[in-house]
Length: 428
Ligand code: AMP
Ligand code: GLY
Image 1 (cartoon, rainbow, N blue to C red):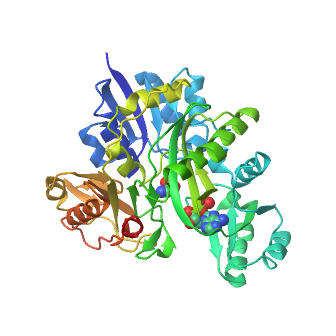
Image 2 (cartoon, rainbow, N blue to C red):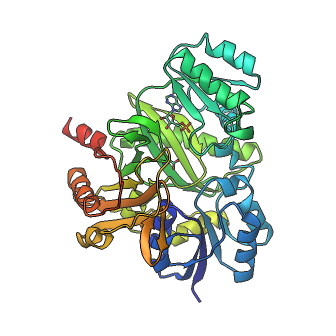
Image 3 (spheres, rainbow, N blue to C red):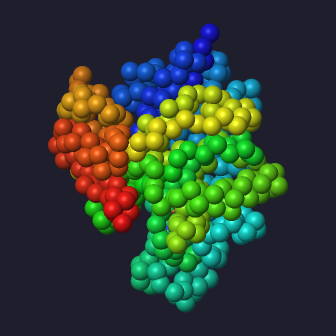
């Protein structure tokens, strides 16, 4: 009998997970809770939202799934992994205590400071008045972060004191992110180039995925408001082999040792958001899961079977097996609903996905899609992740954009400069 695997989530990252898991000869059946129409080809959709963790556990117990893989952070921060383990089930994802690495910026910054891991200088405040006083004497730009989870919106890089104070008020007084704003971190603004580094870990051993880079702003040239991520590519040339060694030696190894020493060992997928300046990496943040959209281009490059890695991670015993990676670069262009990350309209029919995939070397991962009256329609902010592979980064970008150009719905929007930074570096 093959394995039964449950994937929790409904975004592009989870579609990419299902797509990759379905290629494994070890797997007999995949469930996705709640999943999306793109996953329906390879998985049975279970209509349970990700925040109903008790129902997810019930399903996993009744169905006796062999492994649960959790896509988003919120159910992990709510203790989904602990509950599954409590029922004797395997889960690839950290405990609630270890998920604080993403769930609390104060926890993470204090840990980084305690173990001498490079990050921006910072102060923590739980009083608005003290925070304001400090911010007004801080050099600009100043970075302010709500302590808790805020769906990627809890950070301001403020260029003026007005902006800084307004954000601080929103977070600490108006509580626009609820209890996440009880405390704030105020920190220095780092400069350099950002990259994402994502690893599998059993708490001690580390098996890294290749580097990748996200594009967080909505507009070309990194302009406009932050989003969940408008595109990604892999590898990120800024993460040279030398920098990668530093990232492992100076950041991931001491961090995991610190988590063990604190009695909260981290087991699962650990994502470092890094700033790299002149070959020196510093931590911007940690996420306790795969990146979205980084997972899409990463899984497209992963030749090895993903399932043994997920199982070993869950069991807490990763082996030394090296991952086989396609040397060719991949690019993911996120197609979003017009108006995102502000308000947008849903329900427009989507066409052209088959033609896009017909180009070859292209996978279109679904995120905010739904079926209405038998038609595929847009149903969320980020709708599709058009992911392409080719011999070099320029060709991969071109292939991705040719594919995206075939897909249509009313108001569809995407950035036109995904991967440009890698191109510039190659040209340099
Ligand atoms: P975070 O959620 O901490 O990753 O912050 C979201 C985004 O804010 C990051 O991807 C960076 O672009 C930016 N950011 C966060 N912290 C800093 C910092 N100390 N210096 C400069 N930019 C930052
Ligand atoms: N792409 C950024 C994230 O997954 O948090």
